[in-house]
Length: 274
Ligand SMILES: [Zn+2]
Image (tube, rainbow, N blue to C red; front, side, top):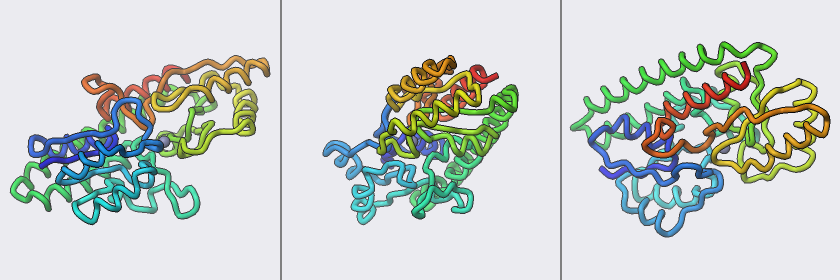
């Protein structure tokens, strides 16, 4: 079975659940912003040659909607977030939901169901393997969720504020009790204006926030503007570190896995805000 996946987070789940029964290809590598990603003719032909396509969904891959729609007429095209109950998603208006579910580890683990269900139906001969693999990965994520809670517990109550380049951390904030603010909105397709930047500068100064964070898949231009703005107001805020938001780290490194990227983020956040 040849499975083509969009983001690293999606590919990681498929690799875990499929094990040796699928060849998994990931089209969005390190540092790639899925909101802005457009399918080239080469990508379209790779998608067309696959047996199944797994993507994150909830408009994360906003510029690929037409491609998925066309491919869905010919082959299984699975939005893995479809196994998350709608009432657990964050509504962002116009009947749309925040797509960044992977930062609530417990919620993200519900997407394993979509992958397991598809593989079991498509290849029933290996159903027992898929079940074993899915169960093991759920247990691993349950442990990771607990680890996040323990590591973030060191941050004092009044310092539990995460300021980032774009609004990717609402689920993280809800799950782990951290207030989140960002320069750009839920999608990086909309640019931040002077008004948003100035508003956030006022917030950082008023709350005496020590550190803000850059993201590997988003330009740090806006975060630099925040630092300048705060300095101008006489408040020194530093860069707390670099977070993986919509893209995992380099393949072959710990951060090139979902578990490794979450662990990296939590360690960076806990260290900067403690
Ligand atoms: Zn995003």
